[in-house]
Length: 67
Length: 338
Image (cartoon, rainbow over all chains, first blue to last red; front, side, top):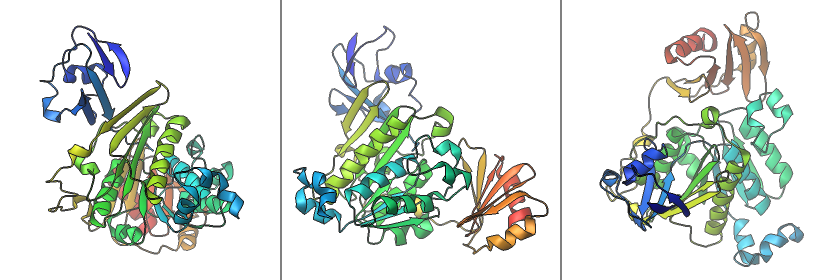
């Protein structure tokens, strides 16, 4: 499956099928993030139910504390 | 000197009118680390009428890689960041007013500091202070611009109390992933891209242009950029910015307070009330036992039991070489308070 992640075209491995899997695969599941799926913000409780489809546009921003 | 701002005035969205507005504005920068330095220098050069910058720390060699207002001499003399920043900003632009405050931004001084300012810039390196800023900004209706950076990443959000979501609306708990500039590292360009965005938003606001409702992030190494419009995330029940706000982070604590400074093997100890410690007298008292006791304009540093102590005039003390709060308190009582 191919998606657009933060503007870049990405080929996802077969085991990544939900937003939750996607955050896991980038090792940012524990971080506090805001996720947008086809222009709609995904509520935090819905990451596991939100399935990805070919051509989806995903934006992920995670909070960082340094400065 | 009319020449000074000529290029910025030629930039149509600002113009001469915008430049005149900037000269009347007061910006508070909380934190004079990497983001604080970068924002402060741009704002001073841009001709902001008054800049106040507050910071609790002093300059170390590891800061020089990206904290652009400081020099080797500052690191060698453990100069307070707020004082060194003030001096450098005044040297950059003598036509504006600059004030450096060598203190911690906390619930006690927040109200006074937020009085008469137009906007606040986040130059901190931790979420504890950011949530105090967030509550204070909501309570006193002061806009502020969050900025954070680590590794090659930067993130920013402009917050307009009463209009846009606050930090608490977006983050319902203190992030605990422990990734800081000390543990995960950082490169200068990540600082600069974040500060550049914050300063641009600040200039927009001060010259009458709306700020963005997007949460933006940059990755200067991976060449990534992302922006999400978070306007809809404003929480009508928010503990910090709704009509029923409790401002949980402005609750004042009593008695001695301690904080473990993340990733630095350092504990900060603060006495219950602000004291006025006579640093010269303390230096004379501990000199027979301590190594290299040195006093500068705002602090005393010395070495004892293989720990490094830094004592500020208000009694706040950083003890390096301990990560245990109880041990730090004991050392504080033994040497500073005695």
